[in-house]
Amino acid sequence: MATPDKRTTIYFDPIIHKALKLKSIETSKSISELVNIAVKEALAEDADDLAAVEQRADEPLVSFAEMVKRLKKDGRI
Image (cartoon, rainbow, N blue to C red):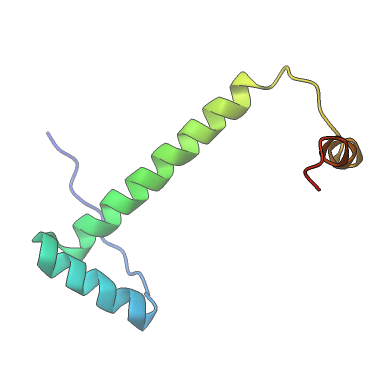
């Protein structure tokens, strides 16, 4: 049995709200659907970022000063 949707109030900047309304009309999706899709995508991206950090956990840390030196040596700054 599916869990019922939860209801909440979100306050949008008027320009963002107008853009959402227009996209809602053009895509035949409700604003709620559009927001749910965007939040799911953002959470998935966060999960990917966390996985990447976990994979690199054993790599040695590089200080900011060392990174600046490397960039200068490579002619990037």
